[in-house]
Length: 477
Image (cartoon, helix red, strand yellow):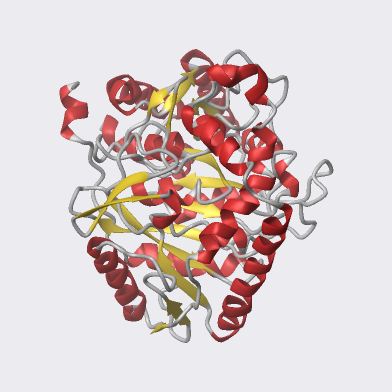
């Protein structure tokens, strides 16, 4: 029964809370017990606050009895370490900031708390969110609950791992190159990269159109439930949109009349056969739901990888560069490499990165006028080691070991370049190594509802693999 509670969706939990079939205290206690069992092996949390969380759960139970429950009342929330949470440490996974404590909470987190969610833990990231994997000198290696040899993804790796391990019900993530969607795919959960401006952002990256903050959960409905609390204008974020979209979470029985375009490789990527098989099965499911499904040529090439690196060099890397002078010995090797490599980038190359993004949307924008949704895999492989790092990742694709930068195994970053497109990563099955795979569902700019409408129908028809842990976790190895 305890394990069943740990994998309840927020939607299910709220219904049980409201009927008094389940108490928020019981759910929180189950997650705490689960964490004690699996955390030593998975390492998804930086800190936990059991007493505070149980007290908040008792208060939530009283609200249900009084009829004053809020939309997320009593739901356990794991907060990515990159976010401010009042009174708690925000280390950015760096020894430099290991003792930093915040006085207030970022608006995205505060909105979830105001809706009744209970922050019970902070989740691991790589230093300064720099990797598609999740490890740092401060917090060690976070591992995939499905297979401990594999990364849960990054940079929101702790959030994805906690959801997959059954140690939280919902979680937050950030995404500047795929950091929500990469762990969503590798952990078998749902992750949403909203269109730029839809959700208020962490400054100063609220002014970086590659950068997004959003929800992660074990179901599409839960992700929408979170998103409905998060979105909307914020008077300290000039980029936040005044239009607030409230997502309809009713799943359609059919996708008749929908036209879906798809690409397996975005024109140039090498995709593992297990990813291809699961993506084709997902497309067949959409076809069974009544949609017209058609392969298209997206027309992109490897130049987009150079473009994304030059863009990151002029903003993201620049934000860390001052640390090299006084804190070099405390930084992770990959952080030092990222900063120093960025120094080779020029202003002209930054401008050319913008031209590349324009050229990419010259193809995708008109295509999305002809189709309702674009679908592609989230990643090219599920075989990414837990200690994968910059500058080269050793990954396995179709039995061949490749030494490549992580953009060659992540298909997420193009949609940070095209940041006004909403993107959901959805589970698509399991690979041969027991690790989940995912698909990305992309719609035209600022059409949030369209991706959720398709995803809700897909999720209803999709047979979710049974949640399971690597046997080594249970054995305590």
